[in-house]
Amino acid sequence: MSNNHVIKVEGLTKMFGDFTAVNAITFEVKKGEIFGFLGANGAGKTTAMKMLIGISTPTAGKANVAGFDVFTNAEDIKKNIGYMSQKFALYDDLTVKENITFFGGIYGLSRKEIKGKSEILIKELEMEKAANKLVGSLPLGWKQKLSFSVSLLHDPKIVFLDEPTGGVDPITRRQFWEMIYKTANRGTTVFVTTHYMDEAEYCDRVSIMVNGTIEALDTPKKLKERFKTDTMNDVFLKLARG
Amino acid sequence: MSITVSNISKSYKTVKALQDISFTVKEGELFGLIGPDGAGKTTLFRILTTLLIADEGTATVTGFEVVSEYKKIRNSVGYMPGKFSLYQDLTVEENLEFFATIFGTTIEENYGLIKDIYVQIAPFKDRRAGKLSGGMKQKLALCCALIHKPKVLFLDEPTTGVDPVSRKEFWEMLKRLQQKGITILVSTPYMDEAALCDRIALIQDGKILEIDTPNAIVKHYTKQIYNVRANNVYQLITSLNTYEHSHSVYPFGEYVHYTDKRADFNPEDLLLYLESKKLSDIEIEKTQTTIEDTFMELAK
Image (cartoon, chains in turn yellow, orange):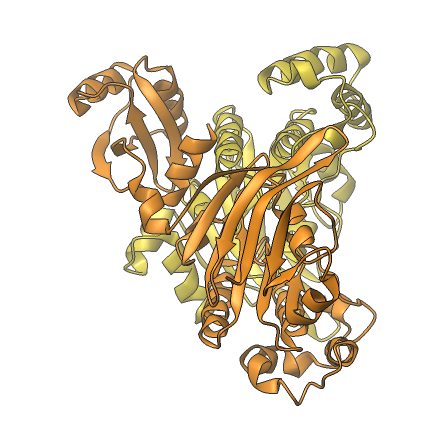
């Protein structure tokens, strides 16, 4: 794998009995890239993502993530990536600070590192006043921003975001994307799924899955040219409706 | 009037979920409640569907008062909560039969109303509801909310987490239901869906910011918005945010929407400024206001 690619996938396949959930997908993601992973509900996105983050073993094909093989080094992948699930996964009855300390510990950071990171993170999120509040009492948008920051605590090479902005208000949604840009600008690869097609436009490249296969993969600009339309929404509708 | 809400307030301990909310929905209208998570949308739905009692104010649905005549309301409305609330262990068909039975009707009697939607999930009628995909669950929930032929349909964030294809299909279904004379109150965090409603209320922090038709709401926005683009989006956003004359900066698809504080704003000035920040391939052009722009301005 060249140093420039942090994800390299070839013919990756996952079958459940007779059903092929992911059918021989092939793609690469570059360092520092914002990669949009789109598809209709049930197209196979979540299954594909689970293989990439090392929690589901593929049926066939090859995949290398952050320098590790998904078949033989799944545990190393988990240590070297960040993951934010669409379901909120921080502890509601711990405070902001306690959550950061807890996850810092899980990721194997030292006490000193945790203290330093925790201060920077709270300042960047402008959550100084909420630092000692229970996470459960925070608005959804704050929780999502905190979750994202926590998934980056151990400086992973890649962060996987599974529908991070669902239901979030328009202003917070944009603040969230500013955080994504900032993260990518620092060299961390961002692999993101979304149902907001305006967010697909924010990605460097976008792949669209239909029935287990990747039907299109390119920059938003080129995809719009190819499908002769002005919006990613139309590109998506044309592809997914067949 | 199909729904009237007069000075409704509701608090949970110290949180004011709804503050003095008033509006009406006409018969046969498709009315949208547009606002983020935590705005108070679900509390309002629960009051109108008689599952929660307001601290202050009154409301009627299909002419009945929500507290004293709650039983009559329950028979004449359909409610699809935001959280999937069907029986996961019952099959698609069993769920539908269950809802038909408790409302004293049969699937056959009102099949015409749900046919368009039900045929799409019929191939899975023997599958347990818990095993359905998101889009199919949503269609089943809509069928269950419709099976007793309600006069008013309450849909709490029916399209959250649903892909664009299914969202489009869902709205086409709503339009067809509206043509059959059903009044629909729907909430959504997707601003593009607001444009599909007859009238909308923008709601945030328990207060209504504005109520009108989508077109009229957009016209209330007085500032000229500019589409700005450059070679590096992140640097563009940070540069625009630190520009002393900037009023608002929001990423918007392939562009950034920018408004300026000055009445006599000249885009040439902004171009020079962005060039001084080492940005290239800069484009600045006027653009149309959307509901999302209006919402963000009001919510600021």
